[in-house]
Amino acid sequence: MGFEQYKKDFDRDGFVIVRNFLGKEEFQELKNNLDRYVREIVPGLPDADAFYHDRGRPETLKQMQHMGANDAYFDSYRGNRRWLELAQALLGEPVEANEPEWFNKPPNTDHPTPPHQDNYYFCLRPPSVITIWLALDPVGEENGCLRYVAGSHLRGVRSHSSSKILGFSQGITDFRDEDRARELKILLDPGDAVVHHGNTIHRAEPNRTTDRDRRAFAMVVQGISCRRDPEAFQRYSDAVKAQHEEMGLKTA
Image (tube, rainbow, N blue to C red; front, side):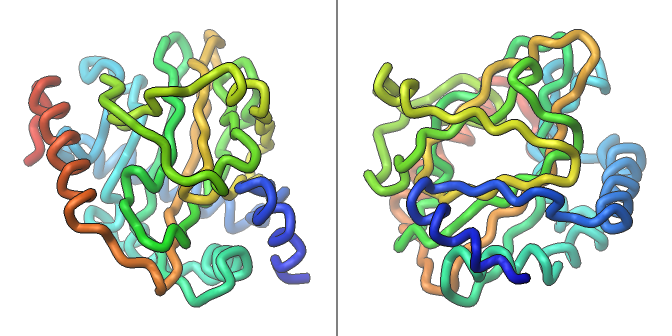
C-alpha cells in the first residue's frame, strides 16, 4: 500500500503520523551511520553545523545541520526512495529533498522549542514543503514531544521575532491560548515518523527527564513548484547570522 491514504488527514490537519515508517534493518542502518557521524565527523565541524547546549559537554549535542555537505552517506540519503515517495504523495507533485538534519533534547536541559512555522525560515512560495521527522527514541510528553496546532497551515504565516534559542532562532510573537487549545501532542515510537506542512505551527516543551534523550532525524522535502522569496530569506539569514554572532559562534 502506498502513502496516498495519508493525504486527506494531512490536508485537513497539516500533519500526519506514519507508524513504522522505516523497517527494522533500514532503521538500524540509519542509526549506525548517525552514531558514526557523531563520533567521527562532529568533532571537526564548525559551530554552525553542530549545536550544543554546552559545548564543553559533548553529551549535550542538540542539533546537526548541513549533514549532506559533511558526509557522503547523508548526501546520498536525500535520494532515499521511501522518503521521496511519502513526500510526493502528500504534496501531489514531484519533489526534491534538502540535506538531512538531526535534533535532540538531551536530559537535564531546560530548553524548549518555541512555537514556529518552518516556512518562516524557508521563505518558499507556494508553501508546498514538508518536514519528515523520524523518531530515534521513544517520544512522549515527559521528554519533549512535538505539539501541533491542527489546521494552522491553512491560515498563512504568522509574525515571528528573535527567540534567543539556538537552532530555532525565530518564534511566533502572538502565540495565544486559543492556539494551545488546538494543540495535539505527538507520541512516537522509534521508527515512527510525523510529517508536517511548512506552515503548520508547532513547538515542544523541554525534556524534563533525567535519563532519556529525545533524538530525531529529519528531512525537509519541497515540491518542484516552490520558489524562494529572496528578500524574505535574506532578512531571515541576516537575523540568524546576528544571533550566532551574539552567541559567539564560529561559522568556519
